[in-house]
Image (cartoon, rainbow, N blue to C red):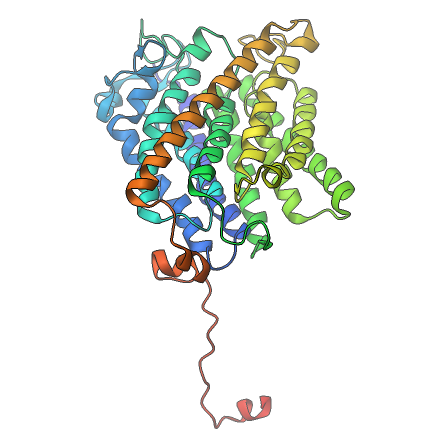
Length: 434
């Protein structure tokens, strides 16, 4: 029997997570220069189209099919064949497989879209689409299988991924497959594509901070579906995740702004938006395993750590344009480790007790292994894939296109038409103005 309440919540959550991608497009678009905003938004938005096709053809199957050695699933669900009649989930909380597939599709979309921030203002459109297909196939789908595919979830006797079933790492909503994964991949992409011309000598200022604030608000809104929807049921764990999500985002804002005030002397709107995202990233792996006070602590730590990490790219000479490593990679890594401290069975019987709740170091080392495994795999495979595509197709725009405006070069458009048409003489109003 289908649980209609759980199904409704899962579909709403899928829609919320889908909204995160256009929200990310606004968030990223506002942070770049006006001559690059359309390209950045296009690279982000098109992930919805490309990943959707991949997910239909084989993506869901590789992520959630019967496991091949704990690494990746088989092709039994290719084309989502027969999925319309299949239910997934434990007895009493079963939902249509298609509802679950739609929810997980949005995770895949937003994860690869995050990588746009690493190559903003210098990536070509069509080579990027090829990269998206390759990266989702070779990097995201295996990692999603490792952490999201529980034994027996998609069918009796079906095995799942090694991180969740063998290592028993706790990752409620994607600290490994989404956050650490995207941060590591951003480093690899930035290394292959190289620095923007003039960086870091020439300052790059956000051209539209209202875009950034609106995008951050949409990301925060969508994150309720991202985290609470991962309960896959309209229950107490979903409610805990929902509350933890907003608490951590709030303390993330405060932590970031305190560091910004101490370092720069002023709190900024960009800092507030970035702090909210940092708090949301930090709580993602533990949102269903910690209590609200623990979530507040995790969000605060994430806001502080991510704000301090922004300076790393200058020390390393790594032009990660929009700080994917600092916010998502380091924020996700910290969040995974903090689960080993703050997790408690009082929040979720399916979890474990962390160090602060009498569980010792057992869960902490499991979290550390999961984080390092995701980081290492993503960094290595992304670097090789990006290098091949860059050599074969030219992932980066040429110097002239980058300096003159990649929007015009790649899309023959500009975001803002500021040309003033000459007015006709003769009206009294016009003469008055003159």
